[in-house]
Amino acid sequence: MIRLYDTMERRKKEFTPADPKRITMYVCGPTVYGRAHIGNARPAVVFDTLARLIRHHYGADSLVYARNVTDVDDKIIAAAEAEGVGYRVITERYYHNYMEDMGALNVLPPDFEPRATAFVTRMVDMIQRLIDTGNAYVVEGHVLFSVTSDPGYGALSRRDREQMVAGARVEVAPYKRDAADFVLWKPAGQSAQHVALSWESPWGKGRPGWHIECSAMIEAFADSRGQGETIDIHGGGLDLIFPHHENEIAQSRCAHGGVPLARHWVHNGFVDMGAEKMSKSLDNVVGVDALLAAGHKGETLRLALLSGHYRSPLPWTEGLVAQAKATLDGLYRTVGDAKAGEPDNGVLDALADDLNTPLALSRLGGDRIRAELADEGILLEDGPEGTSWRRA
Ligand SMILES: [Zn+2]
Image 1 (spheres, protein in one colour):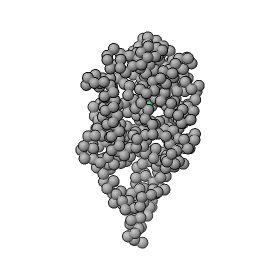
Image 2: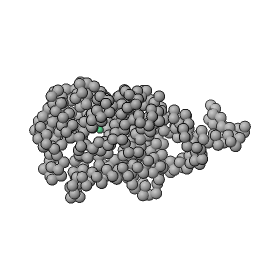
Image 3: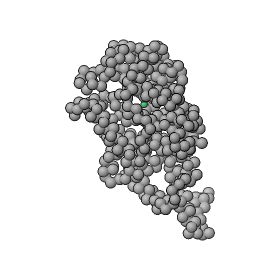
Image 4: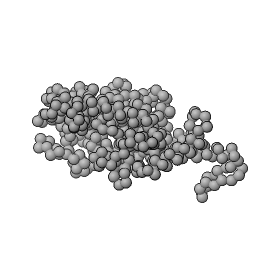
């Protein structure tokens, strides 16, 4: 049995897939306009580890793991215009860089990598359904989701109205019926790259909002797996809870007659630099490529990312990387000669308990060290005062 903390219910609960032979997990992936930093790598490594755990428990073919690529975004357009190239030059370059960097961290490619630009027809279709059900309205070339039409809005983030309006950093837009309403479709801008990244729609030439992209891709994903409209796990970083995941939930539930979007909501904490979250906008990022170029091995960086519990903030320091390297060297010394095969039950139990990687790592080292010492006639014993040893 795997237990996972569910953000919606704010408690650890048993992971219960609808169909253990066809488990579905969707994680919000990168927006491809720049190199990934180590904070971007955390969800990739965490959900890769979770995917491996699920496959271990339920079978190699039990899971389909989807991670989308956001290839429509103002930042992509800005990057293309700054370089004087087409937007696809930007999205292709940074998609490949991302896959290369994550590959160096031993992150397996997901099974399904939907790109937003390939699902615009489904997004338009979903937006039309939301208009038809009275959950969205058209105004001045925009389509907006009406949050007051959804009584369940705010359930994931548990924010009150004022916090939601403040947190959404809502643009002042006189055409909005409610300050918290968010964009499903927006008109195309004037520049060449804006025009290139736009599509015809019943509401004029434009492009989808970020939130509807994921709702439509998840719909296509669940559909393709014959899983109705509810996926088993939806994951991402903590910063996506509001507004992104709150908005995904509202769109999907309203478009699906009240059927929930996901059974489990799993969110990883930030990598931070001292008191600040690592983010491009704060200009305090440490690139994965820069760390690799500095001579750190991908497996050391992966271990550093897994050395803290995935829900806790992870302060990124030189000391953390050095500690991870020492741990890894120690593990190679103690488990290096052990025959590859089934991991210890203690290690698996720790992972199955809300992906407790720090506990799993200590058990991985600890049990092997015990076995090694026992061969030399030294017994380690756990007592109320801690661990002691005696000669056998
Ligand atoms: Zn998303």
